[in-house]
Length: 117
Image 1 (cartoon, rainbow, N blue to C red):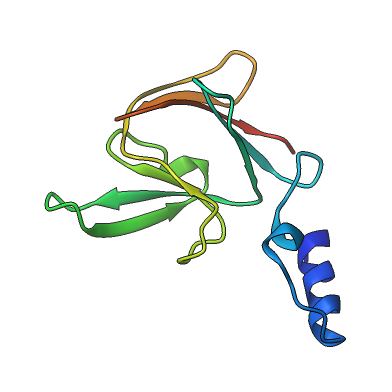
Image 2 (cartoon, rainbow, N blue to C red; image 1 turned 45 degrees about the vertical axis):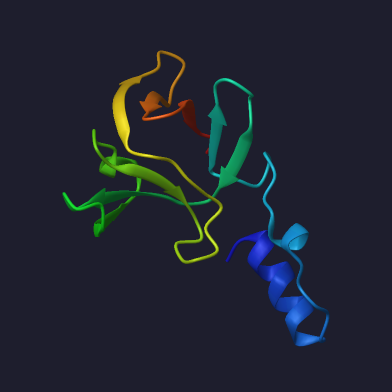
């Protein structure tokens, strides 16, 4: 259980409301860092997934972990539900960075994704 999950559980046990700020990760706690190129917007997550879409644009399948990175899929940061941290549009190009991690382009942005741990 992560430090973040333990904190939320302790707050829940004693009746303290959990806010979105309580649930946000920071650089030192997260396993993954995603940075959008044009504005340096940074998101952190302990898990990543990639969503494959049907031809009609509806959800087809989700692949957890970096092995799911493929052209045509969208990156999603945990949690994997309606409260997700971030989701990209479909990936149109990617390559492995020499420094580690990946650089990829989506339909409307460019990102770097780095594994921190």
